[in-house]
Amino acid sequence: MPSQHPAGGPDPDDATAPTPPPRQSVEQPAEPERRPLAADSPPPPGLFGPLPERYREAVHVVLALVLVAICLGTVWTTSRYSDEWAAKSGRSYVDTVRIEMASAPPDTVFFDGPVPDEVVPNLSWPYNLQSRFFRAFGTRPTFVDEADNLSVLDSLGRIQVATVVGSTIQPGPQEGCGYLVSGGQSVRMPLNEPRQDWHWVVRIGYLSSTTGTGTLRLGTGTAEFPIKKGLNQRFFRIIGGGDSVELTVRGTDISFCTNEIAIGNPAPKPE
Image 1 (cartoon, rainbow, N blue to C red):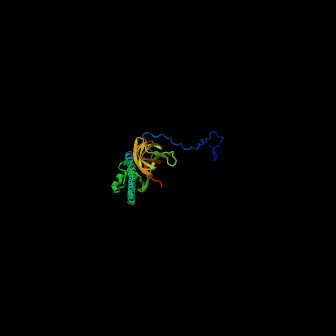
Image 2: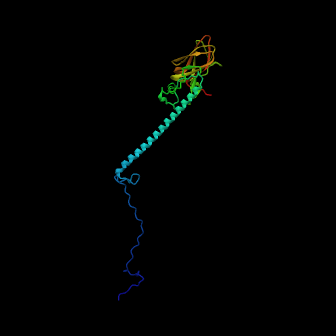
């Protein structure tokens, strides 16, 4: 009878007993190798990824048209707002001038000049001049080239007392007089800053012992103005430029004092 092994398992001393297989360690599955996309491989899913190739160009065209429409709409809106704002400013300006002119004294006079840029752009010269602009509205201010007392329209269309803003003569040496000019003499007066050759307006404030005639020279340009007895002022135009003016007066036994000569453009006189 063959011998039987006990049910408890193989005898460890028995060389013929089968050995158990070695225990294998538990390993994590390896990540698949990442390979670079081929040049002709489709793009990853995104805004246009799922779309077939034949539709992508059409979608790009549609988006471009939408962007163009948005830009044009913005430009149109801005242009319309600018036009309406300019028209509103123009109406307000004209209405104010009409009201001011209706109550102005008969001797109110102006030098011709441009209306505010927001009413008519400066690039529209000479159609932006007040003399042309108000002609279309029936409002007729009186424009002159010289005056003892000058008015000016401010940016809102209100009538203001005028002065001249620009270069001024440096203070004269005579106390209480400034520059003393006698009949037949010429006196040079330096400016605080030079003026280029252009069309300018001059304001001169003076004290004269009698009537006469004055001649002002600015570079190659000259202008004459009447002199009245006493304390007066005169506005007139001149074409020229330089860093000084030269004043000559003519009259019988005339003594002429001035310390106020400005060369520039008319502007409202500060209150």
